[in-house]
Amino acid sequence: FRIAFYERFEVLIQRFGIHRHLNETPRDLGNNAKENFRECLAAAEIGSRIDMLTNGFERIRFGRDELKASDQQRFNRAIDELDNLLSTEAKLNPKLRRVPSKA
Image (cartoon, rainbow, N blue to C red; front, side, top):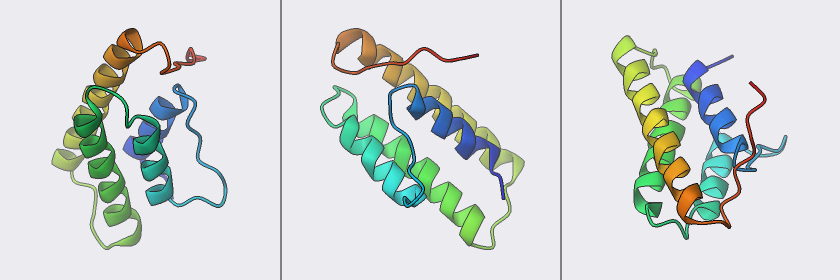
């Protein structure tokens, strides 16, 4: 069962060295990502987007909700915002490691 926006989120955080382990739930991954970014200036904004994406994934994957076009747009916008926040933080904080994408 694939959910494209969540896969995109995982690819984004992988660029910062955060990978989902086989025994981790999406909630675990989200919490690990928030912990990794806790010292960022925009930690609250970053955390709120991670929570929204994780909650959306769980609602669609494990609930009975369908992914509506409006939800897809909202989740993609949140990923774009998260990407911008993390890119800005990486410029300000040399400790925040960004791994170049393979694309």
